[in-house]
Image 1: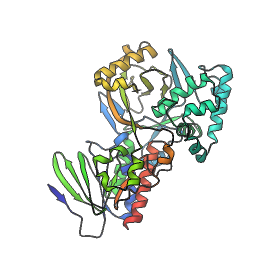
Image 2: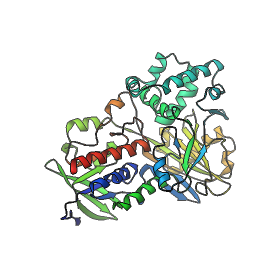
Image 3: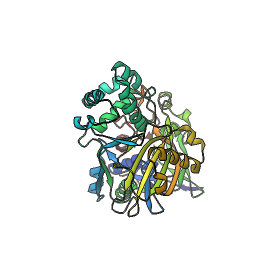
Image 4: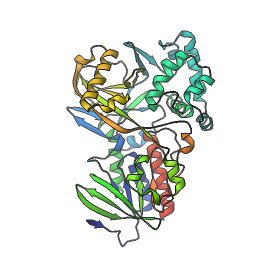
Length: 447
C-alpha cells in the first residue's frame, strides 16, 4: 500500500471526499488556512450531481439544466471566471391531454392558466402572493404539517390542488402532497416566485452544467488544491476521537493518506460506507439517520426538431413522468445544429425494476401519449437510474437539518445540502453554501 504522510512543515493536510459543488466550494474557501488540500473523487471526472457528459454529439447533464428563480447566487462567480450565461427561456408548462398550459407569476398570466376554472385562477394568484411574503420562521411553522393538511386548512379548491400543486410538488420533491412537508414545499415555491424573473432560466453557454464545477476546479487549482479522480475512499481512520487518515483505492491500487481533517461531501445516508458509526456521537447519528433520498430514472432523447414551446420545464401530472425539459442548441453545446435534447425524469418505482433500455422505452411510450408524434423525431436515446436523486422532505425535516458541519469527531466534517447552508432546499446553491460554511468552521478549528 502506498502511504503519503503529512509534510514536516506546519501546514495542515485536508482531504475532501467528493469533487462536486460542496467539495470545491469548501476547497476554495480553505485558501485562508494555507492547508494542503486534496480532493478525492471516485468517478473518472469531477462534478458530482453537476456533471455533464458528451455522447453522440449531445451534451447532457446529470443534474438540472437550469438556474431558476432564487437559485442564482453562483452565476456572478461563474461570470467573473469567464463563463458566459444565456437565458434559455422563461415560464413553465403543464402538459395534460396533449395541451400545453403556460404559467408565470404575474396576475395576468395566472388569469390565463387554462387548467383552472376562472374563479380559481384568482385564488391561486392570492395563494402565491401570500407565500412570496412569508418568512423563514413561518415556513418552519408550516413544516409541522403535510401539504395536504395545509391545503385542507386553507380550503384550497381541489382543482388548484390537483392541476397546479400536485404536479409541481411531485416535480420538486418527488413526493405526494400527503407526504411532503408543507413548509418545505412552500419554501421552494417561494425561491422560485419571490425573485425577479420567476421561472426564467439561465444556462452556461458552453460546457453544459459541468462547466460550473469545472470552473470551481480551475479556481481551486490556482490555490494549490489537488483534485484526484478514480479514487474510492474505503475508510476514514479515527484514532482516540480524532481523524488521522484515509484509506482509498485509485485505479485498483490501495493507498493511504495521513491527514488532519476530512470533509465528507457524500449523501448523508452513505456515511456508514466511510466511517464506523460507533465512532460518532449518538446525537449526530440520530439526526443523520432521518435523512433519506428518493431515486429516479432520467431519460435523454435527441430530437430532429423541437417539440416544446418552452424549455424551462413541462410538469406532467402523469403516472411515470414527472418533468420534461427541452433544450435547443446553445452556442453549439446542447445539441447538433437543427436538433434539440429532451430530458425526462421518471419517478414511477416500476421504472427502477426495469433495465435501462426497458425504462427508456417505457418513458418514450408515455411521452408519445403526452406529445403525439414525438417517437418519429427521436434520433438518439439513453437513460439511467439515479438512486440518490432528491433528498426527501417529510414534515419536521427543517428542524432536523444540521446547523453545523462538525460531526463531534475532531477533524471530521460533513458538507452538502443538508448541513449548515441556511437553506431548506437541496440545490447547487445549498451545496455551495454548505461547503463555504464548512471551510469557515475548519479554519476556526485548525488554525
